[in-house]
Image (cartoon, rainbow over the protein chains, first blue to last red):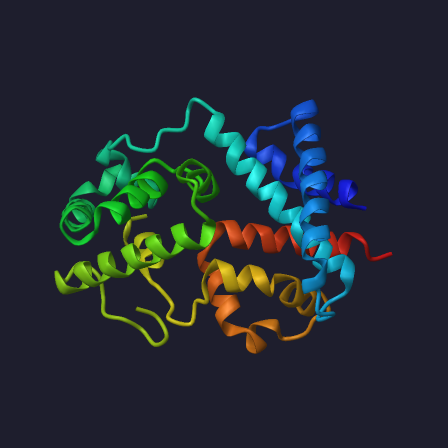
Length: 178
Length: 73
């Protein structure tokens, strides 16, 4: 059951990630094996709030995720710290033909990254946003966990938006969001 | 398209967002409710907010939902 779920999940994600064939199969088998270890270790924490199989599948999915993150960390194309800021507008779909419209916005964003963020927030922002490093890959590299990196990026996003709103580049908040 | 809408969406943070740890802790419950057609977002708005904002957790949720649905005869 675990192997079947891991293979399906790896196959679901594989085409987008350009991992195929034996490599993908190997990843799935390793994920299933590690999920079994996690399930065995945590079985006392199962509270019956869902079916047992759903709870068990969750660990398979997490293991597939983690292994894909580590897979890309070993990939030589992944660069964390390169800072080619000319790529920033493209990350958000800005059309080069309309540079006159968005040039000031992205210049202000770059200034805010430099002035508002802590070194750790800046490192995470550059890796994930500028260099498009998958979050789980950054987690593997930094030996951290997904929640910690997400919270760093969350705070960075909040600060950057506040700076751009204060500068008149973005509109004020709407209900429920900041 | 200019860069405003995508950038604005990315930078917006939802104070209800529970973060990865809490969302992952309850993901099996949330996914099962969703698979059953129950209003999971209303019951767990903080998890719904998180899954919308966090790509990796959203992907895990999609995978878990697919796994649940895949076992349905």
